[in-house]
Image (cartoon, rainbow, N blue to C red; front, side, top):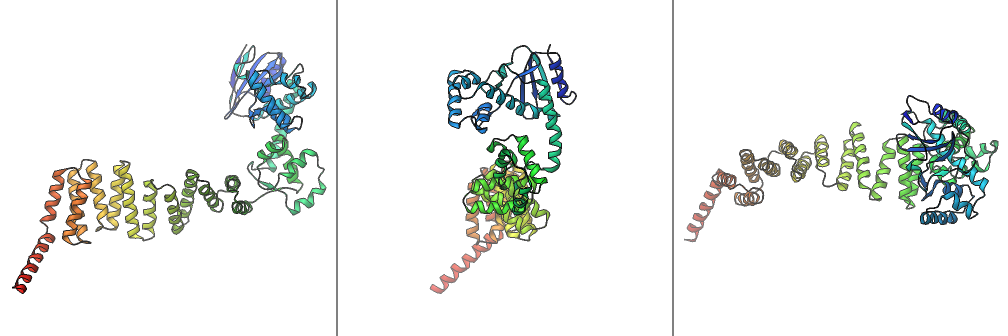
Length: 475
């Protein structure tokens, strides 16, 4: 009979023991926050487990390669043969004489331990037991299948319990899974006091401050659990230590100079999780720019800008904003923030120009309220600047607020007069109205106001006076 429940209320050890004691046959599916694992029981013993594809190969094949039992080329050949024929992986390995029967059983048992033991640590998730033959999810090339000798459930429970106890001790030593460990001169001196074995030597070669422990486990073919246990032992012996943030930054700088920008970025990303500080964030952002990863670079620079503003370093915030705007030139919010920083730095003209640029971008996105706000801010900084009035009028027109638009166009006219001669100003006004305004009644009212203004009358009177003087002189 099947059953189901939640890991928060039932211990997984109890479930395995129940299935073992009742000699049940069926599939136990455990779904965690990230992945799901399916374990098939035959008369209470573990006969099969789901497994991920690793390095383009079934999990078992990749394990055989990393253990040195199977050459990489041979593993790829068998994987291709399996895809072509659909034969079970176990049959192909034994038929070709790639491994002996007992070796394959040992490796399958090892794989199942590595796949299932970590599940015992899960505190959240759901489980379901389905009676009968293996469920559809176990009908794939990647599953690990035991032969006649299955994994003893009691043995698996004992190994999982041992690992959980050991993990507690490991995490007291390795507090950050993303830390990058190194063996320095002092560590090498202490190494003589440690009894090494082949697996430890494999791990030691990768303790260069550029690899996470998870990546080391994948690279050297040592299990994740054993890799962490080895490094914890080396830390306690004074052989290995985690690199500090500045050491990682220095290493990343060297890699960038050598053209290894992607590797430098990977180092800095790991370091950022340990130390989210500007000293790490800035070189990481620069790496992202070099790698044309603009969204990530923008994300990092925005954090740097916020940090600089919080510390009162507005000059640095403005410098970083300029960098971000170059990466994302169509984002009006960046221009708006730039204007705010420039205003705080008393860069009045620059701030007004940035607000106006932001307003234009908001108009292009039809975000009229934000465009109006940006224009008003620009007007408050430079009341006689023409551009804020122009784009504020344009925003009002898009909202159908023609009366407000007329007011702003009249203000635009007076702003133009502060920088241009009346005739030139009227020509500029006509050009703007022709470009921005489709309402003839608005254009007529604005041009009538401009042409009847004192500036135009004075200009006409001056031209007449000049003409009369010329006539008198010529006469």
